[in-house]
View (tube, one colour):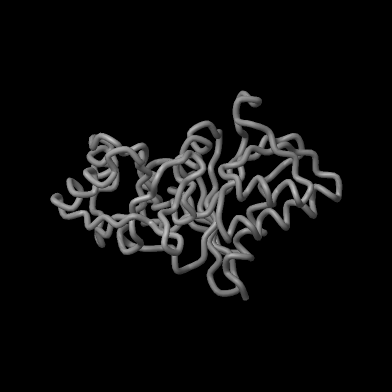
Length: 227
């Protein structure tokens, strides 16, 4: 059983008629969009805002109506993936390179759900490289400073060229291995001139839906439920 798929499809049950829905980015979200499109074709009436050009393209092709964030007052529910989630439900996101728009959409949502497979649930964040979005100007000098602090930065590459975000920035991946204080690190990294946003999502998510084997585990800060 594909753990990503069962988590993603379960999350669609949280979407109600008339909602404005935030759509995340990544392979797990793609499963959710396919399931959501089936419900839309069966009469579910929603509008959506997207966190990336890739998601907009896929959602539109599946018949899901996309609006600009500026066209809505508030988002009822955002469903997104995550690269790591710790025991306090803090996460690392940005493996798909959309962390800036993902964080903006999340911050304007009444509720946030993350959909993950069992490999994404960790005790402590940091094994997955931490993405940060940086402006192109001065980025080499910025990386020298990050290196001097022990963050082991590398520019994300697509083949021989540097990855460019939808916002025309670079992604730099930091290999920290163990992040004991995600909130503190987020604040510290944002003090470097040129860092636009980090992939640390702290105190953001309301519910994590994890596919574990052939079951779904629903996790929030109060309780865990298996179905």
